[in-house]
Length: 257
Image 1 (cartoon, rainbow, N blue to C red):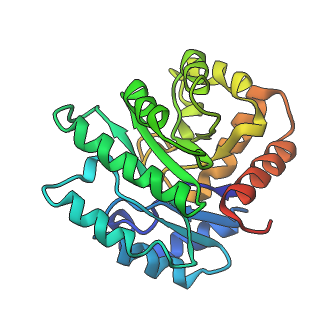
Image 2: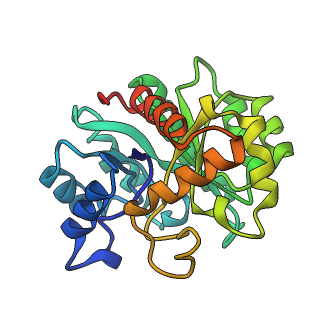
């Protein structure tokens, strides 16, 4: 199994980062993708990834909630890392209007720049979109050129957003522990609309633990719970869900299953 979005390098795991990776491997999660959130966190991210070269990969990018006064300089520093052959994707980047709507233009500018990086370097793009579907699609729709492979990470919306997104692009959708929540019926209804061929599994650890661990720190070892739920909702076997989502992830990020 593959966790296409996990932050096991964050301070939430201080003192047990390596153990968290090992617990995931023991649970059958053979590959973990580490998305970046800021320039400052890259050192911890890369350090952990280097300890598990067979089981982890890392990305570079600037999260929309991490835009400080010097965000353009941060992007300049991050851009210098794009020629590192170990980088497998750009992100996570995108639009987040849940906490702060005042810097929308800056978020869109930063997102557009990182979208261009992905296209120019033939790398997939991991999109963070929270309370900003139209604003995210505005940036994608204005892009001149061939769009890169994209993942709408932590997709938790319903059928209407799937259809709206597909009017502009044809991304993959990252499904995480929210799919197990009692109040996530609209997401479960959207899974057949998305289709297993366009789904990848993720935890977004340390956030969004699946039931029965909801409310506790999430870990990549919980991917089997998410895989089981996706399979149940789609009416397919767990083995088929695992096989297809692993194949999707391997194609996107360029690793061998």
